[in-house]
Amino acid sequence: MKTILIVEDEPKLLEVVSSYLKKEGYHTLEALTANEAINYLINHSVDFVILDLMLPDMSGEVLCQRIRQTHTLPILMLTAKVSEEDRINGLSLGADDYMVKPFSPRELVLRVKTILRRTGDEGLLAEQITYNKGELKVDARKQEVYIHGDLVNLTPNEYKLLLTFGRHPNRVFSREELVEKILGFDYEGDTRTIDQHVKNLRSKLETDPKKPRYIVTVFGVGYKFTGGSHV
Picture 1 (cartoon, rainbow, N blue to C red):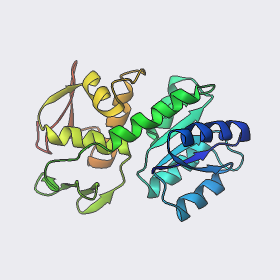
Picture 2 (picture 1 turned 45 degrees about the horizontal axis):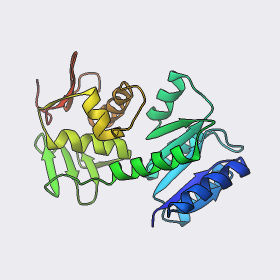
Picture 3 (picture 1 turned 45 degrees about the vertical axis):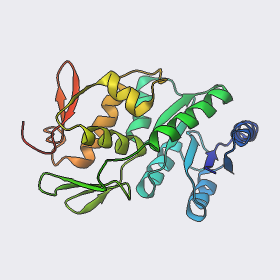
Picture 4 (picture 1 turned 120 degrees about the horizontal axis):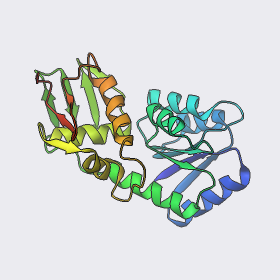
């Protein structure tokens, strides 16, 4: 049974979301503050976080950053902010998806199921694959990624993106293909969202993200993974 941590300072909304998730067979933990959420993450095994951005003791953005320092679990942000800049900012902090308030609890449950399904997909065929003479190593068994021997903390979407590229080196993927593989076929947002995930991944893998060697832009089409070779 998957455990979902709901961080929401509106008690009624927290109760409704928890109720819908429990009906679908999930175990829920409920936090009204960021500090409560941090304590849950320290003392419990959590598989998924639903995170409101407006919390009384800490902004959701800051809490998201703190979670990402130690956890790779999926994060779904709840926000009243609707601008593209706010959405991109949330994704750049490590969120996997976002929902704008007010929202349908049934849609939220569907989003949770979709994210858990895509982040739980099969890994690489080999347990360990290395690129560029060992500079980049993907340990699919542990779901860990290393650069120069140092562990890289990737979000579920970033890890999924790297696996997708790693399975098909030098294949060019369109944004639409990557959205379907990473965000799910039922994703209805802007396909440019994938650009932000690529940007985040580059910042963690590349020595110079502005001159990437692993994930290369194919202008007018999308992206391809070169394995670290110069192109």
